[in-house]
Image (cartoon, rainbow, N blue to C red; front, side, top):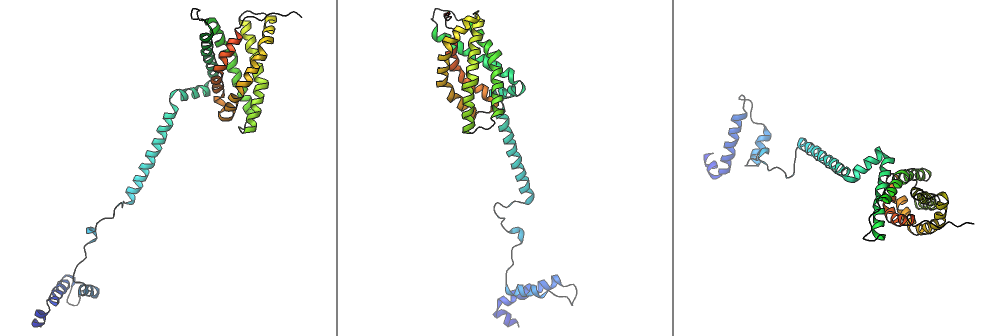
Length: 271
């Protein structure tokens, strides 16, 4: 037997390992190593590394960490969204929208007064001589018209048109444009000329003569300017911002309109 072991050293190592296992797992003389352990040891003369010695997989995270990461990502995403929303609400646009929601008529009236003030000052700068002083009474008169008449009328007009034709498709937009050119435009122009003439002390006869002279040329000029402005306003702008956009378009128009309104008195023609 000794000579057999000397001839085959591998059998010696197997025998020693099996003996150690027998000593470890034996409770009494009748209990020995389980057969599957013996077979495994006999078939493989080496040991596998324990599980904790294995190299962990890359990008492997525990469920707890994964859920925490996802929740933190979602919370950071919601925080970013909230931050972006708060940023979009600050500034002039956010303040103006808040004022329109809280005080719609008053806000639109002040907007019209401001635009008419700027337009009249621009108009005076264009037509007056450098030596002539600025007519602040005229500017105050234009601001009063925008504050008292134009601002509230724009608010009610755009709300009325929006309720009558709530859609913003092409056909509805064209109908709104026709209504503006045939109803609101002529009416507000007559009111503008009459208001300004009355504030300058003109009589009813003088106002009628002025309307006969200035109304038709003003309306023809408006037909060349306002349809494209009305199309943009009615088609693409929400109803609460339509007076602001309309007033913005009316800046150039008001320069012309204030010039026409402050011409000399029309001659009275006796029939």
